[in-house]
Length: 426
Ligand SMILES: *[C@@H]1O[C@H](CO)[C@@H](O)[C@H](O)[C@H]1NC(C)=O
Ligand SMILES: *[C@@H]1O[C@H](CO)[C@@H](O)[C@H](O)[C@H]1NC(C)=O
Ligand SMILES: *[C@@H]1O[C@H](CO)[C@@H](O)[C@H](O)[C@H]1NC(C)=O
Image (cartoon, rainbow, N blue to C red; front, side, top):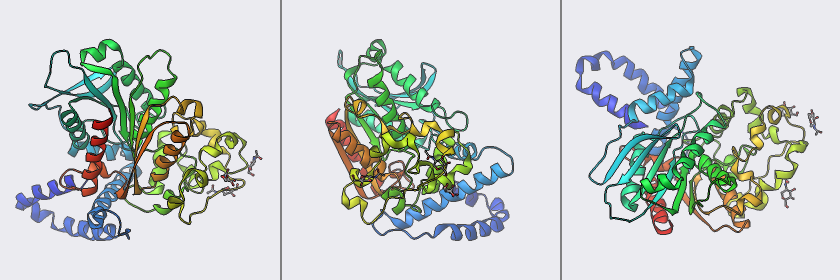
């Protein structure tokens, strides 16, 4: 995130007239920055000072975007995505090794990365990648995702399909997943796979954060779809979002104010995705929406019961937050909260049993840590082989901050281990 500010700064520095004019602006910016920057961070997190700066930048931009909305100039998420994409978008640029093409699969935009090295008759492995960003931000065309997919295509000699699904506020649940599903289903047709020289028995679906949510949902939907004969070999989920029924898992409690994904920000992303009343956020933060007198939840409570699903080392001393009466109107107005397409964690065991082998990556400093760990446990209980790759020094979103100028060590470590795992197992 710092990248656009830094580049801007260099631009100003080169134009001294502009520089003089911007001195007062910069003084104000510096004061604001000081106000924003300091937050207490656990000392086990990777490069805490760098993370503090990244977080301050991100919060600053988010606050400006909320101001844009308050001024009636547009939706804050649209403004935020505009800022991100303005500085981060890349045209599809082929290299000597990888051919990059923007095209569309069944009406959904995709960016395809194909290794140029072609041996006659040789079939390649393939990964369908779904980017993160709270169902509202980011793009397959962003520098970080372009880099990731390009690297996977090159390192694994694999065909990467990066899905450019539509975002909030243009669309809401279930359109994001419908887009991801349509593109996937289109790609899995035998004639399309053969056009891309892809081995139908060596395909994975993967994604990070909200993209991990969509990847998990697409994987579940594929095993239920009788019109598809191809079985995925793997699913790989990077710090996925998997449920919106308990905002007080130990990781939510522990990381309420941990950068860069604060508990309240995650709850707001959920409400935007489900197109819910923003005022529900306070009820959701205290689990009023899943109070114990709500009978709709009876059958799924054990699928979220972290006192059973998490090891003691993650529970630590945290206690469940269970309300008795709560706010029944939240579930009534947002039945999608109970829909496994939105919350893949709560899918029936009969569905989980049919899923491919899974890789789930989690970070200690992440509200979503326990979403991933609970899903790993439910999959294992359903007889699925799971590799849980946990990072004690990781924070949410670390992988997309692997590139300069942020260069997070833990981001690079995560990216390399993830790609190595896929390379070994796909
Ligand atoms: C979770 O499981 C424990 C142990 O089986 C049980 O005592 C508790 O009541 C369950 N909690 C909920 C909310 O169902
Ligand atoms: C749960 O409590 C709320 C709030 O008092 C009430 O409106 C609702 O009817 C109760 N639901 C059940 C199933 O008892
Ligand atoms: C939570 O539910 C209780 C009981 O219905 C209610 O009194 C309280 O106002 C609710 N709190 C929020 C933040 O919705």
